[in-house]
Amino acid sequence: MTVFHEGSCARARKALAALRDEGVQESEFHKINLDALTPDARSTRLEGLKALAGHRYTPAVFFNAEYVGSEVEITHLARTGKLARELLRDGDCDVDALPRALRDVEDDERDDPGGKSIYGRSKSIKLETREGEESEGKKANKKTRTRATTYARMTETMKHAMRYRRAEATMMASSSGGCSCFGGAERANEPPTMSKDEIVDALALADMTARTGEGEFEFDVDDFHTLEAYVKEGALIPRGSPVRYALPMDLDRRVLNSYRTAWKDRVSSKPVDAAAYLRKMFSIIESYHVSAETGMVNYEGIALDDQYGAFEEATCELRAIRLNQGELANEDARKAFLLNVYNVGVKHAFVNVGVPRNARERLAFYGSVGYNIGGKFYSLDDIEHGLLRANAPHPTKKFATKYFKDDGAAKYALSKRDARIHFALNCGANACPPIRAYSANKIDAQLDVAAEAFLNGTVAVDARKNEVRLSKIMQWYARDFGAGATEVLRFIAPRLKDESKVALETALTSGKIPRISYAEYDWSTDASAPRPFSLARYAS
Image 1 (cartoon, one colour):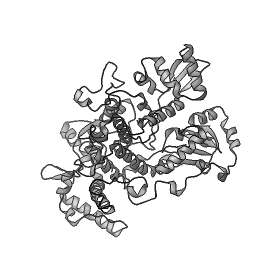
Image 2: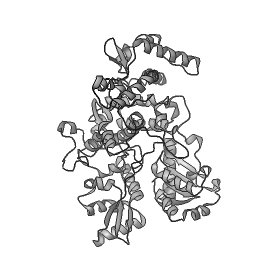
Image 3: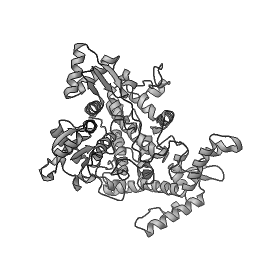
Image 4: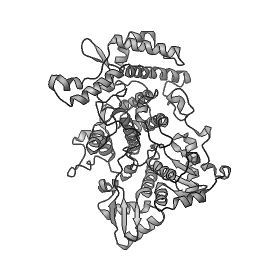
């Protein structure tokens, strides 16, 4: 059997779990992770999926060459006791007789050739050639990359050298609980720091370790005794007198791209692609920390991955991207850019500040954590409601008319709401749509595909009872989809397929508007051992 899926997709995990419960062994799956393929291989496999199933939706399960459905059909078969019988029909599979799209992934299709750096891990990640670099070619490209990674290595060395102080800061913040007695709250808000001598010793130790091992650390001799360059580039922040140094990310845990606060390196002329590139970088690192058995992600492991620093530093480019300049002056491009930034931001936040466990923590998580974009801080809620939803109020604010109170803050918001964005935003919960990369020139078609995939996987039409069951998203954001229940159903109907489409359109045409109910929202995540959300926590 073959399962098409996107990364560590919750819906794919559900389908695979149902199959395992029926005794299917891991070795019997042909799992095609589209996120792990090169762009060309991904496109080819999706075309094959469309030819066989009539669509590009994932997850898609095949028994031999017969399309069975997504997790909805698989779990229904399991619930009705028919899955075991269908598996017997699947029988032994002649791999050579399968269509090319259903066969195991070949090495030349994989996007992780196993290089030592994040760039080497992915065939699809390439630095854009900028003006003035053409004559230098690969030499200039390597020089720029080496200079950039020097600051990342400094910061990673500092993080490891400071791990005990960071742990102490976490415990102090947790134990103080905001108590001001004996200066507890004040001390709890202080970031961990190191003196110049301690930093020099840490760098020297790291350099010796690298030179006696397989790597080469690439620090210049002057770097051991001159920290001004790192302060100037925002890789270190001086604190107090006598001067000690803190990591910028420890000063304000809400800002995810604080790895370097002064970004003067490369800035892409195509911000939409740059944001998609960040998602790809994270996806490659994440792939090394996903359980093959459960599909769950070890976010603690990602925080300690040697290549995670390169990703964090790359997010600092967002600091220099202006939301109203270049290609982002076009609203379609800005929409694609913001979708990509939001989706990578949620995963980034899971690693840096932990996973929210309840409604109160979710409000703090989405409302306070985010990115500095173009010199202004935007929380995840700012991006979703203020910018993408055209300054529409948060669903918890029943009597509000807009999200941003200040009209100046709303100047980069989209001019009109597009309900389809709800099928492209992934808040990290298992009930969310899968994460995909969106592009400036294909955003309209991509959102149509995302809407159809999500609705066909979540909408249940019961013609006999004249009832329709929808995702909670359709209730929370009902105004985005239409003025009333009838308009919401008219939005859904043309995007469904087969019997569900016919049943709903027939009901609407006859004037017998179905009753609407909503499924419980699954707020659980793909985290294997989630660290509780806290802005006082530090990755060690």
